[in-house]
Length: 177
Image (tube, rainbow, N blue to C red; front, side, top):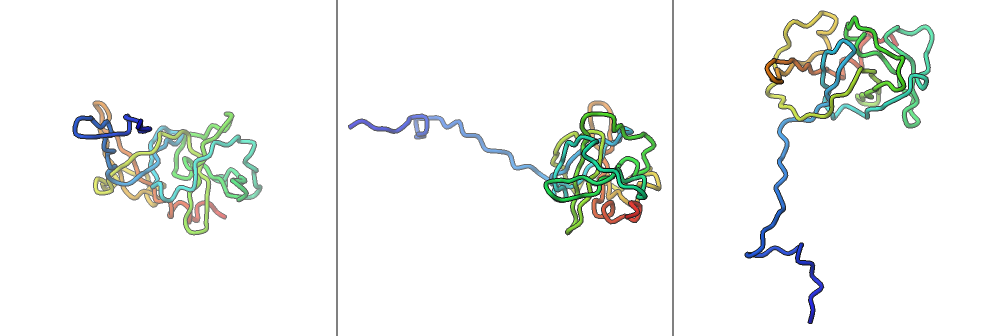
């Protein structure tokens, strides 16, 4: 009687299994990104609703609001405010809105959501919260929104990656809404 078994799925004492163990990531997952000045920041992945690439025309300007707010955006049937994160943090480099798509990171805390326009996304990274240090030389406008920083070795130079406090950003009176 012929067997219908596929020998690729069989492992036995005389067969070698090529199944590899997946490495378990250490730490917590963070989204890394840049603001227009080129400074890099991170947000915890658990508080990010989604990352969107939106045309500037899809953001509806609202008169008589804070200049930090670019307007509102319809994200999957939900209207959310969209703000310039760089300017919010005191960045003097202007956001370039004259491009086909803007990077918008929608953060959420309880039932409140806010879209933050950033310059570019680096990606998702696993980082150890235990390696988080007290931030050094932070501008006063930025200080209330920084939880700490990681000192990363990239090539021959040391780089600071600052962790933002999304709840403090979302609930800040600086937005003026």
